[in-house]
Image (cartoon, rainbow, N blue to C red; front, side):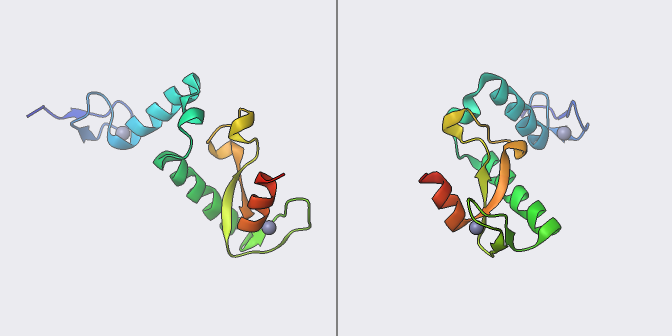
Length: 112
Ligand SMILES: [Zn+2]
Ligand SMILES: [Zn+2]
């Protein structure tokens, strides 16, 4: 069995070579961003976590409200995370490129 080592970031003991699972994931995300492979891989579990956090933050600040896509803002309970700059146009899966939109606005935007 491998000896546990402290995570380089938070010093929590881990069986990973250098970082705990959380920080390994963060580090991996940074590496992916540099390589741009996060864009190619698209919707992975890390993205889903970021997307969920985006919607949660949006709800915490403005509630069940969709800012609208080519139509005025409106109440919406089916908020999803939308890529501000689409992946196809070189956008990333990072929180800074995500904003909350309801499903119908998100679909309308995708179909444009
Ligand atoms: Zn850590
Ligand atoms: Zn909407």
